[in-house]
Length: 423
Image (cartoon, rainbow, N blue to C red; front, side, top):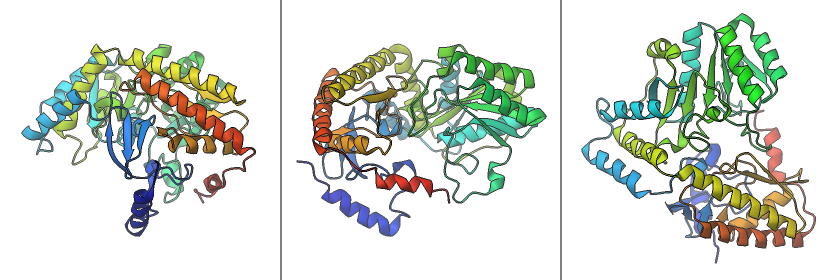
């Protein structure tokens, strides 16, 4: 039976010693009631919360879990290197090996730099673009997420207008909007930032339109600016290359994180020879950026990416889930809005402006052992099985029944806070 007494106790303790009780994307304050905040363990495609409730997990730690929590081969490589040395006075030779592996795998990449978080990698990309061009202005898509530093955090609390200076925004996939933004930047354009897909929260996802991606490349070539693809979230989930390889476009820089070491803390910035000299002349570092054990895990992860059918499996599993959910929703008189690639699904209800159906459905799922997210894209990991998908679809069917029997529901009040978070 599902319980949450231990989770509630931990939340009460957290309120006393952690600002707001929790912060960042790991906070569940904007999720349906009773979503667990604290977890005890994870294995494969499953999570156990602090109360011992088990979930089939479709968030994958918000992306890092690609081959399964606690993957034996990846963790063995990590542990073996830990025993030899991890954070040392200098990096191990694994740093060179990993750079060689990633530049062999990613077509546009001639060099690699390593850090810890996606924000580190996107911020380095920004600095390199400005150093390379000796210009300041960057062009970004409205609503896109590129990290949590003052220049890019989605919530402006604690930042100043100068933190956001020299930025011009465009609408993703809108060529005219992109061209207008570049024109506004004028002779000061340093870079165009692009997400691998439109994976903004609360709205449907979109693949990059070929004409949009191609025009972004052309505009950078015409102006001397650098094209940056922020592949932190989607890297190696859509392709065994940079995600924009799917539309035949090579960026100058690409930022990576999350899945590259299957959950061990590591991120990367990859670049072309064009930007090599600029990359060599910025200063960026961190006490733990050169740790050897996560790099050992990443090398093993690269091997699995290269040698297994993980990509085809996750695509097939995601499509099977998508088809089954549509069928189950239809049986109960609902329609879903399923957008984006099947391996990074975003699942919302059609005709649900107040998110009431979606929240009720997700709450019913969580209490039956399926961890979905109502407004953020999810992730399919290679550890999922057909049996997991079958069980998820059975539970989803039950949850649709719960929502149908509940009748009309009011809008989700907690989402009203979104309008005030940046005040």
